[in-house]
Image (cartoon, rainbow, N blue to C red):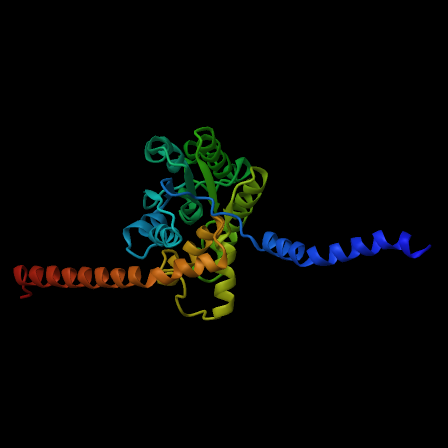
Length: 294
């Protein structure tokens, strides 16, 4: 091949070399781009759950408030719809779904359910029909249905109403991961994981996060994430909030922004707890004055 026939190829190679840095930068930029946070400003998020969720709103540093504050720290002003009621199980959440969630017309709904279904023992909700026939539940078990049917109905009804569900696995029942209750809870959480996969729902696998944290801490005689083995302390609320925010799509950098605003909420929670303790002490003192011991 003579010099003239080789020239076009050489010219093309030089042109490619000139644009290569641009192509490389474009590639790096596109691959490094993080997906947008799923929740948008102005949208409502319903938080359906039991006492853990009720506390997640009632406590100034509860996980519901941490989630809302974390989104706002990233420029997203979402409106919370608190829907946690102490003691509630899957059948009760299904019964009040329309009143407490759907009628509020949220765009999103987190679902935290399962602890009471297991923890309440004979008064709980069996996982499936086979478990319902085991003879371990009280005479009203049939009216409560099964966990699988109740949760599926909640998800299907929410989706049909245009609400996007976010599934949360149930958190621990006692911080002893080998406890009987956590063993009973395992198939409930397995069902949630499978349902989320089948319906392509975002999920926060909170139990897995709790399990990892408890194993890392390795403090069997201490309450690391809960105040009583079930309800969240400060660290438990933060871990739950991190799980939910990750399910909404926050990156590590965005989570850092969220965490930066949480200390102010923790200070408010501490002040609230102090005032409540003082009020209880005052009430006890007044009661003692009215009823002095003889």
